[in-house]
Amino acid sequence: MPLGGGDDYFTTKVFASAVTAVDYDSTDIGTPTAIRPHHPLAAPESINLSIVERYIPPTSAAEFASLFNARSTTPSLLVDRLVELAPGNGCLVFIYPTLAGAHTFTEKYLGPVLDPLLRSMVVVNGFSADLSESLGRMPAVDRLLDFPTMRTKASALCAELNGDSRHVRALLQAPTRQAGTFSLVYAEPHKVQLERKVWADWWCKQEKVRVRAAVSRYFRQARSGGPSGSGTGKDGEGMGSGAHLMPIELIQEVLEGVEKREAELGMDGIEIGVFVIRRG
Image 1 (tube, rainbow, N blue to C red):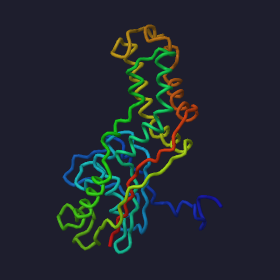
Image 2 (cartoon, one colour):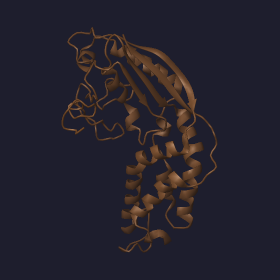
Image 3 (spheres, rainbow, N blue to C red):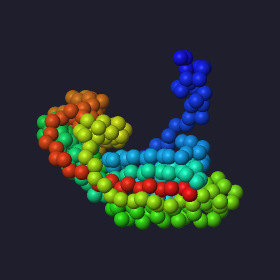
Image 4 (cartoon, rainbow, N blue to C red):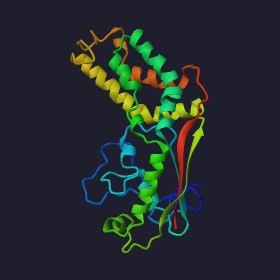
């Protein structure tokens, strides 16, 4: 049936109110206001069941920085989803990697694939160790929290949202604080094993922008005689034996290597925190 009309599930009138999801990883979404910005995917108090899942670390600490903070001047993925829950029966299932889970991912999943590839780029192609270190690092990993701390912060967030302050009323878009109470009804750590094809696809799509930025920065510095290179001409002289590679080729080599390079991977489980928050 054509998208323009009819009662088919996928007609435009069904999704006429759809919005673009906020990139919570971005460091450019902050707004210096007294009341934090809200970025809903659905109307407040309209969702009965919401599920948020993340199994690998975010690309930057920006997503995590305000996660459990209802007063942050940057959007919170968790708070935004809680505001959307319907009073009386709304329920959010929230799954997020712990600090231990993030380290397991980088050391047991990503590392055995990416590290040999980066070493080869340094030895064979002549790229700098600085570039290798930049491409291999996920800055958010050490900023994540252990499970007990996550559970404590989730409980504290519920308590804050159950308050009757002007800030909470504005956040929940309620003139009075009678919009249902939030309670943490389940919180447990679990371990999951991720298939190579699945996590590699996640990583490549998530990290593509960061990898592109790191490679572009390296080539600019190398051509200008900056810290990453000695040299200089527009043909890349002084940048190492791999300088004949174009930036786009180097980016593609990294992403395809993570997806397809053979490696011996263990079956370690990645620790995640599973939280269920109900709006009564």
